Image (cartoon, rainbow, N blue to C red; front, side):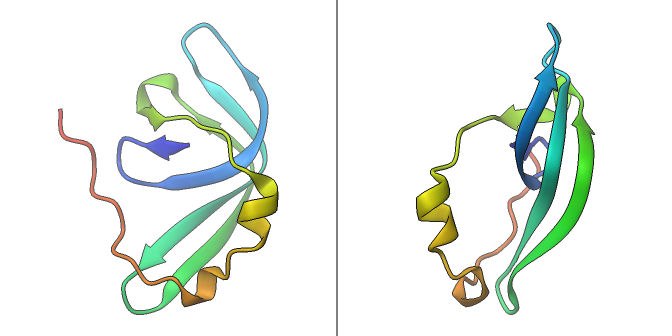
Length: 82
């Protein structure tokens, strides 16, 4: 999930409702930095309000597990403009 404020949250989808409020399990946030690589912050059980979700997609776990995130340097995403 990419939130409207630019956060990237990786998780196991636990449940969602008709307003697309999302309950995530075993979640973590990936924080990108142009100087320090990617930091992964453990969040655990996490709720994202539907109006705060800008993008929801599925990750290829095999590909994701083979990426060396410590070698990736990138600027963080900017907040979505409305």
